[in-house]
Image (cartoon, rainbow over all chains, first blue to last red; front, side, top):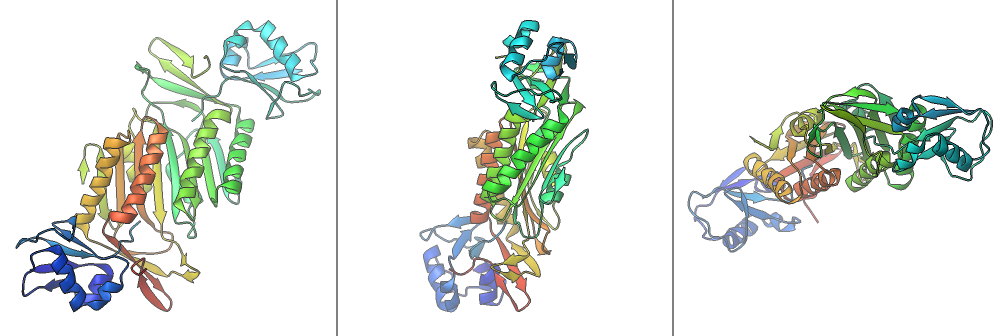
Length: 77
Length: 77
Length: 141
Length: 141
C-alpha cells in the first residue's frame, strides 16, 4: 500500500512516498498508523487523507490499488 | 451664459453648446428655462446640472464665467 | 490622472494589464478587478456598435472622487479606474477597475463599490446602434 | 483542463490576460477577476522567495469542482482558475480567477467564492524562504 505525501507531511516523513507493509482497511486506521510512525504529524493544524484524489472521511474503506495521499493544511492562492 | 450639453440632451437641443441671452441666477431657474425651451428634456429619467464640473443642487447660485453643463442620465461602464 | 496611488484615465483603448500593473505591489497580496465589455445584444436586439461620449474633465474628477473614497474608507492601497471613449464594437473592453489591498475582501468591496458608483455618477453616455436605429442607454424611464 | 465554459490550469507562469480572454464573451458585460501575488513580507519578516508544491491531479479536480459549483449556483457563464507551481519571487502572480456573468454582482460573488474556497480546499502548499530559514505556510496552529 503506497501513500503519497505533500508539503510539510513529506518533510516529516522524509520522503514523497511511503510503503505500508501491512495494508490498512480504513482511513481512521491509516491515520493512527501515520500518527504513530510520524508523531510530528499530530502537531499540524489538520491532516486530511485523500483517496483517489477526493477528500476521505475517517470511516471510508481503503481498497488495494487506491491512490492514497496525506494532505497537510493547504496554503495555495 | 454658455451651457454645455451631452448625450441625449445634446441631441434634443441640437447643439453641444447653447447661449443664454439673459443669464439666470440659480440652477432652478436654469432648469425651468431649459425645460421651456426644450420640453423633451422633461421626458428624461433625470436631468442634472453641473457647475464647474460638480453636480449642483437647485438652490445653487450661478456666477458669470461658471462652466455649466446639462447632465442627462449617465450610462458609462 | 496619476497620483501616487490612484490612476484614472479616459482614452480610446484600455487594457486589464495596465490597470493590474499599476496597482500591484509586493505589499498587497490581493488585487480585485472588474472588466466591462460591450455586450452584443440588449433586450434581444442585436447591438452593432456603441459610442461613448464623455464630459471628460468632470468624468475624471468623479472617477478620482470614487478612487479617493475607496482609499480612505475601504482599506485598499492602490486603485486604477480606466474608461474608454469613442466608438466601440461588441466584445471590446470599455471599463477596467483594479483595486489592491493587503486583504482580498477589501479589494473586492472597493472594486464593486467603484463600478457601481461609476455607473451612477460619472458623466459618460453610451449610445447603442441597432440595425434599425440608435438609442442613448437609460435616458428615459 | 478546458471544457466549454471552464478553464483550470496549474503551470509555471500565468497571466491575467489569458484568464480574461477565456471568459470574455460578447453576451457577458461583466468580468470579475482576482489576482494573487507573492507578498514581500510575512508578519514583518522579509520573504526572499516562495515555492508552490501541488498535488496536481487532485488540485485540478478541486479547482474544477469550484468552477462547476459557481457555474451551477451563481449565475455565471464562464470561469477560469489558474495557479502556478514551483519557485516564485515577490511580486510574481501566483493565482488568477476570472468569472464572467451577464450581471456583475454574480461575477464578483463567484470570483470571491472561488478564491476563498481555493484557499481552503485545493491541495497546493506554499513554502516561504526567509533569510534565516523556511516555513510551510499555515501548517501549524
